[in-house]
Image (cartoon, rainbow, N blue to C red; front, side, top):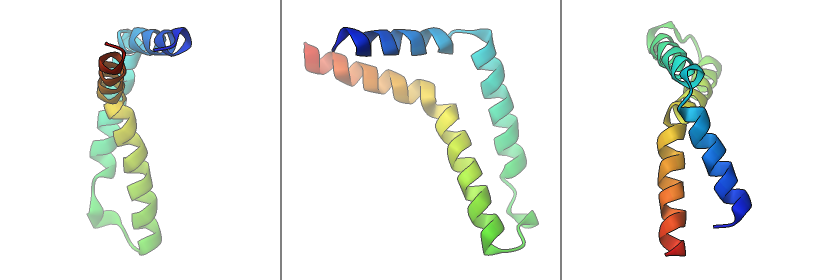
Length: 79
């Protein structure tokens, strides 16, 4: 792993350990719960928009796990 990539992951993991990150993920969970209701969708356009919102929020919610898996894979390749 390059020093730049190592620094990238170290800074990302530092972010994940902050209270602000935990608060953000709590807000994301609340947003997912409020958006995850198909009974209010009136047409295909609204459905596609809501799917996009949920996709982005789900990515953000899973970013910590995704980053950890990618970091582990990179370290395994370097061994």
